[in-house]
Length: 193
Image (cartoon, rainbow, N blue to C red):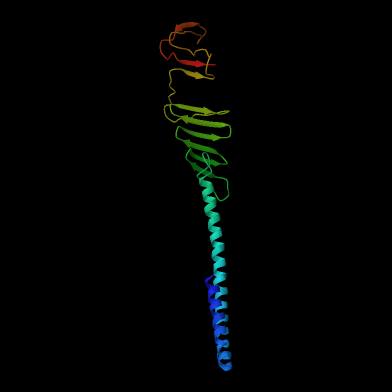
């Protein structure tokens, strides 16, 4: 708009200059025409720069809109996501917790639990409880291992008969002779199915 006013002022100056003598009018016309051409060239440069600035502004608005959408996605949506360059590993961080996923499995961390999963094997640690599930497993220790609980069930969770306990009768035949006795030590809370 400002440039249009400048060009109109230059045109008005041309009209005013035309009111003088014919020789003066010709010289003034040429001088003003040169100024108008110069102003027109400068206006073209300014318009190109404005066009570039408008494009940059549109790109910035698009980026800002995308960030706003990510923030406004609501509960459960990742507030932050990191992805490996090949896309095989992803880390999501949200108000609900952290989840790390990769080709070998998943690790999750929430306010009340830690979970690990790989194929058909899963480990869930919650407040006061540990659960391991899978199709097969192996626990190996180089030192002492202890499995404790008020009741320990092997192979099932209910209805399992007790394993040999303190007070149970036993019968063995080590060298052809039958020996009978009673178990005097051990626990009373081990069961097997």
